[in-house]
Image (cartoon, rainbow, N blue to C red; front, side, top):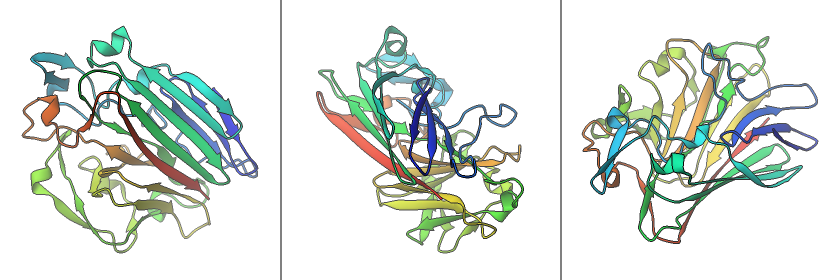
Length: 292
């Protein structure tokens, strides 16, 4: 377990999956991150790579070959190497192995850095393509936040999701685990959205951000605590809580990719939202979480 700390926050990161497992305020012990009770969902903040969401039949085709890969890819279940670590910064690395090559036929170098500054944790992804061919991939975050943050002050329905810019967002619906982008809906987020478990009866709410910098905040009028996640250049963000379990957490998930569409032909290069990285090139993306 790797720890970051300053006067405001104590953070724990696990080499398994490079997963953020705890963000706590030392002053009052307030825990912001979902603590992975398997009754509801046994993860905290998994990394999604090299796919986001579900593939049709958990498989895809590439260069005439068929590969098997389960939801959200394999990075969340891999042991990362710690490249650098001090009190306010840590860098984790994952590279291809025989196990990953059987699922995803590319060498790769994935580095994830966490930087703590006052009340803000910055998360940065760097994907390098060392191959002599174009590398298709997706990546995303999946941090889960306790709602309510303090169980003696309010419950799930006392919290709101506030999104900036305030506007009506295109929403990509899900049909089962697959996206139905051809029938986009519109979600009015000009005012805060009151949380209700029934919001998630069709799985995640997926907003099409069109690469516009966006901040999503979870808060309650009952106290001054909450979280605000800002993503600078993501095509999508997912907002999720498991239904119908009525779990006491909400995930805010910046995505550079999306689940297969209903009409997907299975060809990985045709996948909606897929990123493509040229040989010897790097992809970078980041988001920040402010805890208050």
